[in-house]
Each structure stands twice: as C-alpha cells, then as structure tokens.
Image 1 (cartoon, rainbow, N blue to C red):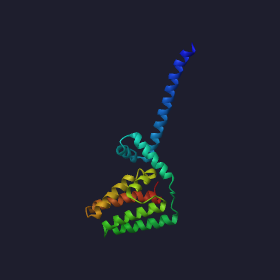
Image 2: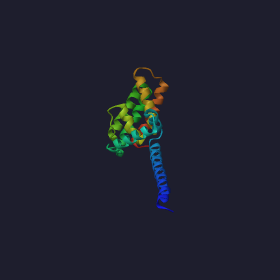
Image 3: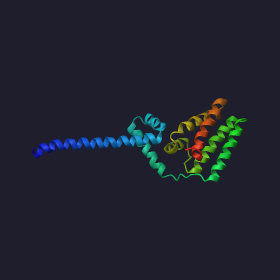
Length: 178
C-alpha cells in the first residue's frame, strides 16, 4: 500500500475519531449540567434559545458561584433560623400576608448569611440555581405569590402554598435536607 493511500485512509479515520471524542465530551459536559441544574437547565434552554447558549450561561453561573464564599451554617445558627421559621409559621394563622412576607425576608437573610448575594431577585435565582436548581421552582412560586400578596391579590390558599414553597428552599439552605 502506498503512502498516499495509507494517508487517504488514516486521515479520515483520525478525523472521525476526533469528532466522535469531541461529541462524547460535549455530551458528558451537557449531561453534567443537566444533572446539576435539574429543571433549571430546561428553563435556561428555553430562555436562552438554544442548548449551546444555555450551556454557556450555566457554565458562567458555575464560575461566578465558585467565586462566592458560600458557607455551611454552624449548629447554633441553624437552630436560630429553625426557631425563627417556626415563629413565622405560627404567625400565618392570624396574618397570612405578613407571614409570607416574613418568610421571604427570612429566606433572604439566610441566603445572605450563607454567603449568597441578595441584591436582587434575579441575582438570587442565578446564584441559587448552581446548588439548588431542583428547589428553585419553589422559590419562584413563593416569590410570585408574595409579590401578588403585597398588592392584596393572593388568596389564603395561595399564601399557604407560598409558605410550603418557601419552606422547601429554607430547609435546603438551613441544611435540614440535602
């Protein structure tokens, strides 16, 4: 077999192998993002318009998140937050709107104490999505009811649901669930 024939066979085979390896690497990378971000991955694909753009966005979130100083809460702080949550829940009976607003404030304070930025709702979502992507829908639902509640537009049942949603994120942030 001549050198040119051998090259004519080997070069396309090498190119195919390289492309297959690249495709496998990209697939694994995307799969890791899907697993890490859960439902937030699909939401980001929808808002970004493509999987490629979503992947870049989520990788950017990971890089930004890695620069944060996220810390676990010491047991004493966990107990203090758990007690505060119990108080907020007890207030729900007499003042549902106020209790939901207090739940939002408590979750925001907990985020800040853990090291998450709390400058705005969108930033909170972005940073929480890296470690709490599977619970983010709870936070979105609770926040939406809280916003409507401030204008007197939420029913008591919606407010009760908001408390349940806030509790899901609260439990993850305080460290009572993993």
